[in-house]
Length: 486
Figure: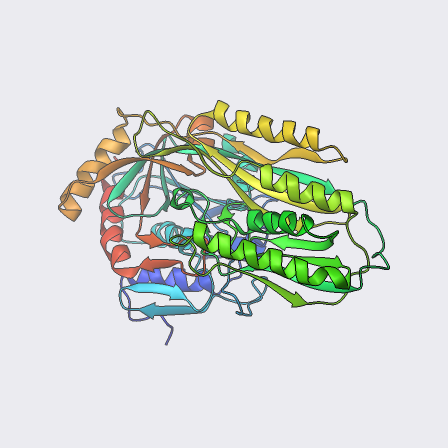
């Protein structure tokens, strides 16, 4: 007996549990992509896999709907891999450990992968069904959605014949998503100007930022949570005010589109500077706990003993990295004047990683207006130029366009009426601050598009959950909607 055996609808939770057993973090999608191709082939369906491990599956329409306009079903195969402090999990090779807690499914100490595992499960259930009326279907399951939407950008849309698209990457069952933002991801590379550890710097400490909430870079950006990478930079800057410290091995954040919950760097310093450094870190921690008393009650800065590194950033490069990082725009940058209460533009400084050359920052700008994304990116490029020292800034992945709201959408009208009839309530037609792959398909192919969701919480974090009763609510809606798309 499996963990989700007792939950209905069985066809959805069966696929979701199988997906949870397949490692599928961003850039590790080959196994799950191969499995989808095998599943499609087993059911006599045409399946095409490209070199990025995107999968296109085609299924003919059922009796009476064979000649109806084709519908594109969309979801993404990858998930964000986050874990709680102290949890040991090899996301490259180990499955997600599912738990059922009341009405919710969660994971044991890690992110769940309901984003977008539940949506993919709906699509797989439609593709393998024998009792659901539907028009001809084209299902596109993309790779690396959570990593700059690389898969969707690479996908050859000329293969598609669909004129309508239903996406299943939304997070609530009370809304039909009818518009969303776009995004662009960039990297900043800071050379280390490597040096041997100075003979005077015989004390080594690991500076750790721990206990932050983290979260989704779009759905949670307006909650004013702290960013562990920025806190690390702030701590290094504070330390440099009191002692000549140099760093090594900066590391923080899980992925560019997750608000970083932890970060760290190795510090080397003279023994007589240790007390001043400890005092500066303690003082900053007290200030941060006051600043983020509501949003980050668990925030803490720690200095723990560590082995000496083989080499360190130069003093100039140490200061350059900390100062530059602290100046990159982060969080909510503007609010929409068109859709009140919605963030128009934001930036999430998602990760810092050590490289052979020094350190790389990765950040994602989300905006409802394309030019605002580019304006923020230009600001960062200008900042990097002023920083000097060989700092470079480049785009990463795709410049994903926004999905513009169409109030005259025929698909939206059909979905709204179906929701009303099946659920017995009026759905909210929603335009979101988030960036999904919808614009990458709707603009390139000219598709009439909506997104249908399930109640998810705390995406991109170890607290991620899905309400299984929401799945039971949404699946009948999906089944009925398919039959109405004549």
